[in-house]
Structures are given as C-alpha cells and as structure tokens.
Length: 273
Length: 169
Image (cartoon, rainbow over all chains, first blue to last red; front, side):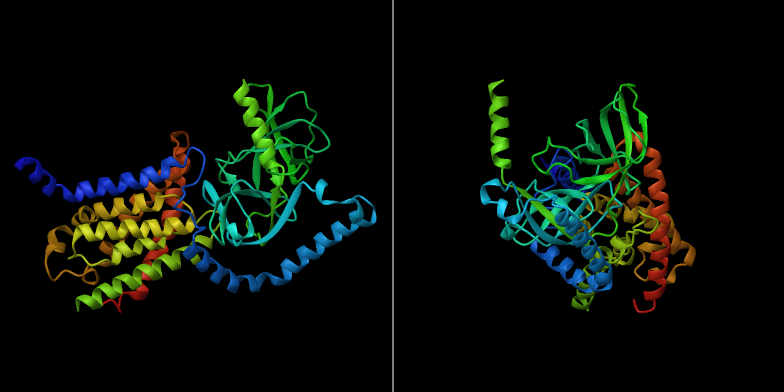
C-alpha cells in the first residue's frame, strides 16, 4: 500500500499528463465515427457571441461584394420568373410545399483543416435542427451538425466525414460526393459513378434525389478531371466547386418538411427486413 | 506580487486565445498555413511554478482554442504534451542553469531562446497534425504540414517574443 502511494506521488505529474491526454483523445476519437462532439463545438453561447462580434466588424469590408452577389441571384431568379420556369404564386398552396428556406449568415468559416466546420448565426430558436442542408446562392455548403439556442455549426463539404448524394445533371447516374484530397479546398471528389456513363470535362454535378437533406438539382460544381478508380469499374471524378469556399457570407438553410416521414418509412422498411 | 503575476497569466491566456481564433485561424496563408501562436503562452510561462497547475492550465488553453475552431480536442492533446515535456526541453536547451533562482528567459542567448521555442513548436505541431490527419498513409502530409506551419509559427513567435520581451521584466 505504502509503495503504491509512493509510486502515485512520485509519478503524479506523469499520471496527470496521461489522464489529460486520455481525455483529449477520447473527445477526439469518439466523434470520428459520425457526429461532432456535443460539448466541444463553436455553437455555444460564448464562442457564438465572440464570433458575432468579430463578424459585425469584418462584414463591413465585404458589403459591396455581398450586394453584387445578391443582385446577381435576383437577376437569375427574375430570368426564371419571366420565362415561367417557376409556378405562379397562386398555384402554390401550403400542401404542396416540401421545403422551407431559412436565411442566415456565416460568422466563422474554416477550410484549411481535415474536418472543417462553419459557424452560423441561426439556432434552435429559428427552428434549426441537426441534419438540415445548408446552401449558398451558388451551390451546396454542408449539413447542420450541432445547434444551440442562437447558433449552429455546419459540417462543411470540405470534411473527410462528409458524404453527400450527387448526380450528373440531366441524368440519373448518382454517386457519393466526398473530400479525399484534403489539401485542395476548391475541389471535391465524386465516386461510385459506373464506367459506362458518358462523361465530359465541364459537365455539371448537382445533388441527387436520394437524400432527405437536400432537394434535388442544387448545383455543386463542374467536372474538372475524371479517371477510373482501382477496381476499373467506377469513375473517380474531381469536381470543381461553384462556391468559393474561402468567401462565404449569406447562406440558406433548407428544412425538408417531409424528412421525418421519409426517415420513419425507411426505418420501418429496414426493421421488416 | 503573486496577484500581479496571476493576473498577468490570466490576461495573457485570454488575449492569446482571442488572438489565435480571431486573427491567426483566419489567416489561411497559401490556403492552409494557420500559425498556432498561442503556444507562446508556454514559452512565456514562469519557470518556478507548480507543475500540476501548469499542465492543467495548458490543457484548458488548448481546449479553449479547440472549442472555438471546432477541432475536437486536438489542440488540448498537443498542448498538454508540450506542457509535460517543457522541463525536459528546458533542461536540454539551457543545461542545469535554468534550475537556479536567478534564471530568466531574457538572460539566455538568442540561440537558446530560438531552440527552446523551435522544440516546443516541432513537438506540438507533430502531435497536432498526427491527430488531425490520423492516417499513416498520409505521413508525408503530416510532415509537410508540421514543417511548413511550424516555420510560420516560429517566425511569428520570434517576432512576438522580441516585441514584448522588454515589458516582461
């Protein structure tokens, strides 16, 4: 007994170090599986407030650019409106609405890590919950991961955990959008597209219909380069993003009103297997 | 005097965390170089202090940076490692000198200060990027990031330590 106590006293610094290292490793690895740690994320009150404060100052420098973007988007929407590509408002009733859009702002953005997260200024009080899709006017951005009352963190598509259903525009060949070359923040990879699909450099990639998070046909990027993967039966496609991931201001959060129904149905089907 | 020192330590803690998350995390020089300047806290921390407090303090320093930058607990793990190894590194760099009461960082030579900071940075960055990338197939990437980001941190660290050295006694 005496010896054990002596041992503990002599090595107390080392034991303390091991203990703290273990704690950090547990925090780090438990969330490698799927979700970010519940406690260690920047959606909490203090970090959110500090980032809002800093964003309030820095956002002034990009106001003109931000305006240009919004006018550009308005122009695109007006083009569609005048060409009758969308339904007239009288035809839209509440029963046919599947998606609801909430606007927000990025208050902290990262793109240089292996798993990048974006902090936004909308949270539970704006009815944001986990697994909502986040897009910008140009294309997809990520999926909501953690929420607090007024802030949320978004898992960026620039994350080695990210996996999003995507397809080639105007076809139904779909694959998974991942980020494998984790040093280039303008390029993501599309995998699992069969080799019989005709591809051309410059083809547009959009989100697929298999996801209950994003609506179909949200733009992602264009094909930059493609090659067969090791199995020689699927393509490995480099997709250049439409979004400039280094410069993101206004964002839209998409709420799928049918998501719950879809998930319940899928769970039921799996249970019956 | 004790209150004065602890006040300085707390102030430095807060300022370094804010400097790291509001300025240096957004630098993204060449796309991925974000110097981790908050390590300077360990460089400036007084030598004659309780080691237990020091390690716990460093753990929370890393954790604070982690919470802001959504990096799980990678910074905490790396910081606690150099906090534990700091006496060993100091012994290696300054010899037995540093155990004397009169020893001060400012009294040592520039080369010693440089080596001390460089060793802290190399170990910290190696642990940090190993945990972040976490795959041995990418060990070249780990080394590349450690060296390049390490050099950036070292340059900024030397600049900061020269800038503020006269004020710190």
